[in-house]
Amino acid sequence: GIVGQIVITSGSLTANGAVNFASNTTDANQVITVTGTGNTTFNSSVVTTAQANLQDGTLSVTGNGSMTFSNKLTMTGGTVSVSATGTLNFNNADAFSYNTGSVPTVTTNFGSTLNFNGHLTTAAALTFADGSISVFTGNATITSVSLVFGHLEINAAPTVTLAGNISVTNNWTNLGGTFAPATFGVTFNGTAPQTITKAGGETFYNLTSNTVGPLTLASA
Image (cartoon, rainbow, N blue to C red):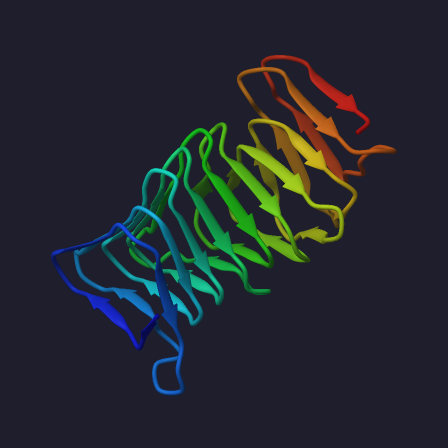
């Protein structure tokens, strides 16, 4: 484990083996901080136990690698990139904040997996790639300006609440959790047939279908 901070202001860091960033009392607020044009590439598993703050530069997960944020990730700039077989885990109850700042970027691919155990807040437009998979594993409020998911999945236990409109370009799967739309809408706007799956049916406040193919309601 690495105790303390990794601060990247320029240059590149590549990790090919497992990396664990442990927090301590003096460096509990920032474990990974990218403030310059530096690039950090992870080819295997990475776990952070304190907050990660990205202002500039790039954090990349390649191959079958994964990166786990045990505390909140806040982006005010820079880029987080995950490969088609890579995974991002946001494990905190306040999981991910995507702020305006200097226009941060999240780059996903067809097959990328993003696991959210808590709240997802976006203050700027954010689009996850068509074919990427966003899984809500814990209670979460989705606060969005313009947020587009590929596949969206809700696990069996969580309650997922909307605090903004969202769009989905692939399938919606609810494995038994509770979806609370409040007064916000979900737009299905994929370029292929899409399916909404939940045993007993799903509840939406405002559902818009702009999909090219049919939108099918299915029971698990």
